[in-house]
Length: 328
Length: 54
Image (cartoon, rainbow over all chains, first blue to last red; front, side, top):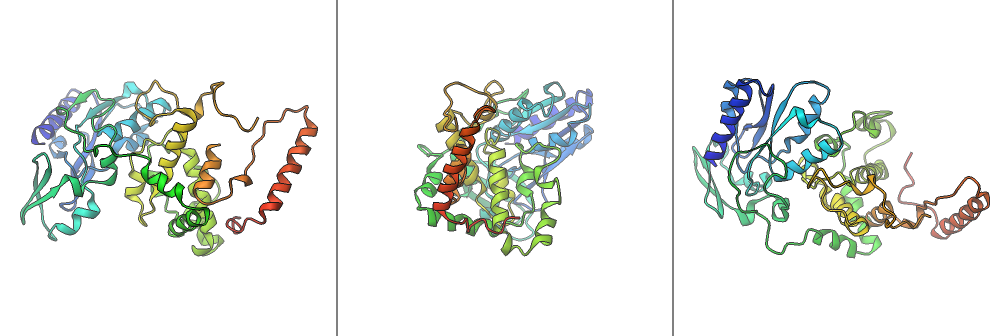
């Protein structure tokens, strides 16, 4: 892991020193031992602060959109799952390829902050991370903490499709084994919900959606949500709407409309990076919604996970005479 | 079709949504489809789940 960080820093320094890019977007040390933070370096000296490891859950692809109307070149650090988001943004012409340098990192799985944070002594400072193959060891000033990969990774990592980036101009390290579990079924959880009867499904989602604050965090972090003006903000910002129209409890159907619309809008663009679910302040299982559309798009249109390449069109943006068409 | 399956997934009746491709010269078909749709919705009854949507 040390070697990957060194490679990454060296490449960032080279890119910035040669003026090949104006800024490198990567990960920097976090405010506590259980996380990192997005870090933006625009001078070679700042590049020394870049880090990488199993605490880098953020998908940095979305940050590109903040710079889409400028004319500067950028470099961005991506994991396998994030790199699918890069492909989707390129395919939607949201960011020009020639202004982008993709720095790939090999990912052996990301630790789930919700699981590891309680195990870390308060105030502990991170000094390094070791990867022993089956275990990540967080070396802190208050001792060494072991986190076996088969228990402490994010749920999405056990279903990982691409732990190596699908697009990269520079690779910071050699391939590492995928954290995906042998024989894991990506549709298993969706199937469980589908198997419930209508009333049970309805109350399951009512229970989830009733907690929704309409904070828009899922949308803001989503690499598939690239609209400059979002449909939900065309009249009144969402978080004000519920204040005007009624209490949160009364706005359950509104929440359901929000989630249905978002679900529909990201079909063919959701790369299943799981960022929505990670940032949700009330823990709505959002991936369960979007994975349903991934499954259906696969069954109806034979579509694979979006973002695997820039060649394959999204199922809703191309027509084929073989498409099912019950509306004719 | 994707939207119908999504509705079903969150516990709504997918029959409440109908999409038909009708050409400008098929006035009779508009009436026929609307009538069918009305009957089906009447059979389903009021949509209590979404009654508060404004």
